Amino acid sequence: MKTMLLLSKAVFALMIGFFISLICALLFIPILKKIKAEQTVNSYLREAHQKKQGTPTMGGIIFIIATMISMLLLYYFEKITFNYPIFIIFITFIGYGLIGFIDDYLIIKRHNNKGLTEKQKLLFQLIISVIFFYLFMISGNEPLLWIHTFHIKIDIGWLYGVFILFLLLASSNAVNLTDGLDGLAGGLSVISYLTFGMIAFSTGWLEGYETVGCFCFILVGALLGFLVFNVSPAKVFMGDTGSLSLGATLGALAILTRHELLLIIIGIVFVIETCSCILQRYYYKLTHKRLFPMAPLHHSFEKKGWNERDIVKLFWIIGLFGSMIALAFGVWL
Image 1 (tube, rainbow, N blue to C red):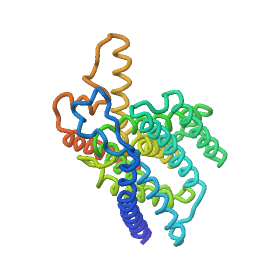
Image 2 (image 1 turned 135 degrees about the vertical axis):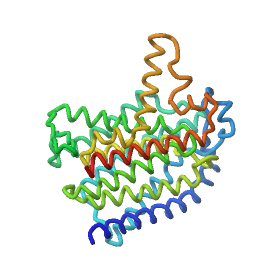
Image 3 (image 1 turned 90 degrees about the vertical axis):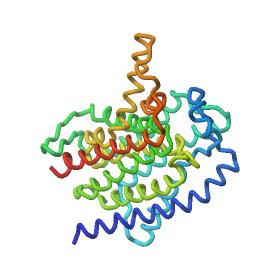
């Protein structure tokens, strides 16, 4: 009976997120076009992505606002309760979204791809991450790494603080790097948040675990509504507003549910994309040659002549298998 109730909540949360996201998209996309919030294509991709020039960006506000409206509606009708874990998730979700919004705004205003500098962006991300870490630790959480399958808890002391900061920064930037093809980051985020929704529902020890799970499923629905307009050919891009918010919140969920290590498998495509950029940069510094035709890795497939939709579908499949392995290994077994 309990399982059926949770399933019903998940389905309802997903549905409300989807429909409100559709409404938000229909309202915001014309506004973004009107204010000329247009995507500026990277000069290295000008030939392949010329048709994308002028497509509205900053579309992350669609699923961010849709998710918040959906959560408030469920709270108003007493279907969920607000609690401490969801509070710090909101801080991460909205905080990183604001950083991305400022970056997108500067890019649009300057009509190039120069928004916040790397140092400015890193500083703002670090501030939100420190706030998250402080709120997480004062709630009585211990500096433990959990390996659920083997029922192991490792106390890493002060290193856990460094680990949390790294995880939030890494996950936010990993999704940001992956957001380079129509529907790629959005589709992978659907898979990842669907997985964390199921994980959250299984963490009965977490205060307000049902609300955290509902948040994940609402966001899945909101992302699906966004993808209606974001899959190829995209009518809107999420921009840094969406990608930074999605990535950091994934990290926050991994920390709160104590499945930090499992995030590597759930977000396997995000990890691969980030590693391709790191390897490319350091290999070039050492040899003055390129390890890949272009980084992140999805652009290398483009350089090899792959169709954009085929690349996205391949990466979605890899992401789906990663999440299935993570659920089987980290939750069920």
